[in-house]
Image (cartoon, rainbow, N blue to C red):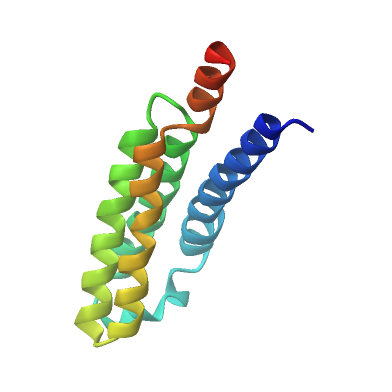
Length: 127
């Protein structure tokens, strides 16, 4: 395999992993079992709000996948991170809030690097 093909594969796997987490772990699992998220339950969020949050996670993950809506999806992911940080701080879980601050680097990096498909096309055209 050429180096560029390996880079494309790595970027696509990373994008797929981010979208999968948003859709399946944070989205579908939350919609199917909203009581599993103790931090939200302990912070006083209702079941309806937790369900809406699960749907929100699925929408942001779907937006991140497409090149034209990736930046919007990343901004929604950043807003989601901020919401989760405040939720952790409300229940007094500072360690998890700090982890979530570190997780904010993922959408910021995606915004700065651009969508893997667009980057791949730029490399192929110029190279």
